Length: 271
View 1 (tube, rainbow, N blue to C red):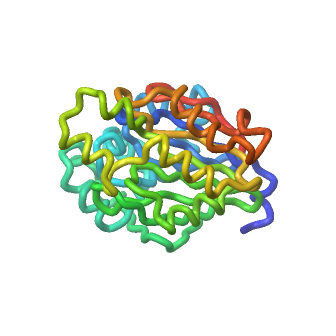
View 2: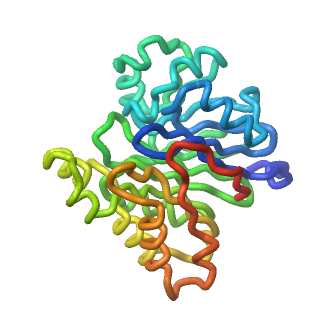
């Protein structure tokens, strides 16, 4: 890492997090990157501006997978601001075939590969594979010289690879999609419930808590729970589950755990 990156703040915010749309910002100094663009271009630019970030600071959009709640605003955003769209080959194929992104300028697409790091805006980014029923699904580990963030969302099970990058980070953004009881008693049809629970689906509150209980260490300084289901979860349930898992591990659990809001931006967090 370059020596100057330590002089700049390493910051993160969620612009939206949930099944209705997902987008996140991570930045270093005067530049940064978006992870996913699952809300409108207008909402993204407005949420960024409210956190003091202009679109001129965004240097690329990194995509986790090709589901609509992660790419809904991508074509308009990337075309308007001429932003590189970085994703795995299979994900780019899915994006190019998706009706929501049919108008995306193909010249903006850039291929990345799992476990192959690249440098952008003073940050080192490492994509890693995750199991989900999209195309070319990845999470991201992003770091500068003094801090790091791992985002692992839309994965049905925590693989050794995902666990490795989560444990390596000083801040984690971890899916806590559903509460098992709410899902079981909810109105979703059986096939959809099974899809959510499957190894190609989503992590439950219990799954996220299980990771924290087994793998939390003092180097993990911030925990953000993301992608909560609108119908099958509640912020208080997700947070309570995480805090219970951390009970006895750290006296600062209450300060560590934050639930990212579904339909609005979060504050800008310094990592």
